[in-house]
Amino acid sequence: MIEVVVSRLGMDPGTQTYVVVLQEKGGARLLPIWIGQAEAESIVVQMQSIKRERPMTHDLCKNMIIGLSATLRRVQITRVENNTYFGELHLERGGEIVQVDSRPSDAIAIAVRLDAPIFAAESLLMLPEEDEEEDSSESFSPPTPAERDASELSAEQLKRYLEHLRPEDFGKFNL
Image 1 (cartoon, rainbow, N blue to C red):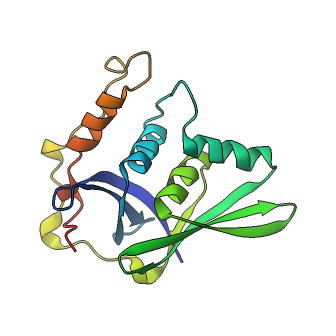
Image 2 (tube, rainbow, N blue to C red; image 1 turned 120 degrees about the vertical axis):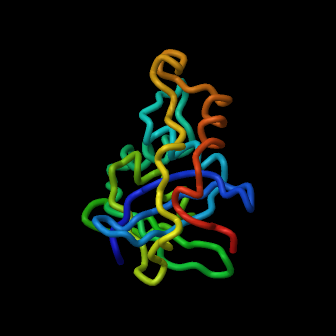
């Protein structure tokens, strides 16, 4: 297993689905994973430190883990079968490790909330192609605090933010 970090998040124009790109920590290899809108929003909300009035589902999971006196030790993206990625949460409670099957998108959303490391099977990582280098001149920037309504991003603002993230910044994602 290789430790990875959330590098980028955007929309694949070919499939009109969101993509989270994990990057090898301290390296160049990438792992793109197609995810749902709710999970993409949840990851962005946490990474941008956007406060919501009520807890989202992944906040609930975080609160349950803490409430049960457990610790999220790590998240693992273990394999892909028929274009479906598999992940695991590794929870520790009372000195015992419990592995919980999870969609990688949910596991990542929970990991960013609990500052847990994310690992991926080495066989899933790939080097980016040379013609896919980042062009930061056209990147979409996140909304400023002044643009947020009292530090809370509206659903429409969040949708616009996600729609303007450029997947070409991190590679081609057509299967």
